Image (cartoon, rainbow, N blue to C red):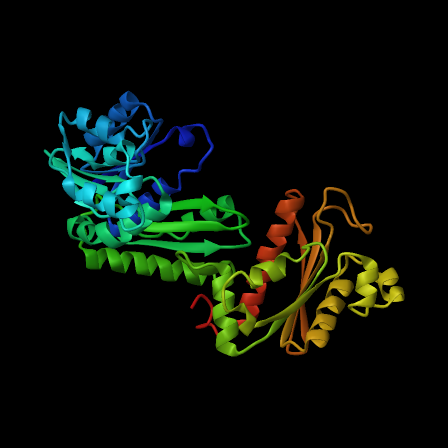
Length: 416
């Protein structure tokens, strides 16, 4: 079954607000087995909304329309929808009762009551988190869902009130598997994947993110294979990719690198600390991003200044003068010192020239990461110059990924 999305709101086309609703809907519809044809974004003008709805109805069976269901004059979605399908607007006493309950009679005005008018034949889907209800309407060969534009309300309605209906509608199910890569570029990854000769029924797509690449595999929706056969094809490809790219894959689907690290640190009952220079506390921030991080994170020293490296990390001036603050020797000493200061099982340290200028006789983009674990240091030299902010984040990606690989020592732990 084919789907389309119509997102309304002048704030979207003017760039004031990001259209996260369409992204949420498209991803969830794909995972449910629907084939999304297009996303139409339009302003608040009634005629442009009508045009977008009619265009969507021509290419899709199931259409989701977001935004414009509120009580103000610029909320034109219901009027546009009714005109597009040649329907009358009817007054819903059910919605009126709900609005009365929300606002109490003293605060209820005609603008609020305008939300009680709905297209003829529409089914009301109660919204427990807002005043605008969602609507469902079947018309000829199309099924329409009209949803509020507030993201939290839309997500609630979709997950709690709509998804069960969609599961019964989806007849062209296909599996989608996403693998997350760090340390290999999109073009290089694509070239290597092409050489694997994966099943020709697969569709493979790539998405370059912030210092990582996502690879998605699915069976072509036009394939006549059974769900069991599709499942076997996707899993065989998944296993082959994980084997071939084990040095670059940190996880699957929506699980973040931070979540993977949290899981393995808690599982192995390990405590971690950081000593940071050019990353400026970013490693500590990412390690404490998730709730419950106090179970494994002890603390951090951001020794951005050489004097702090001497006083807090106990690195001798003569040592720093001999090797330099941006060096393998310095970053290894920082990690060892942090492990001793915090009495941690392992420590992660960073030192480098983030840019744009050279630092400590090292050109911009020369960065060092060191992990001290079980009495040994594992150190990485990174030479990438994407710009100051990107350099810092890229280094944090490599640091956390290498930390994860190091502590996931058993093969069955990696990518678990």
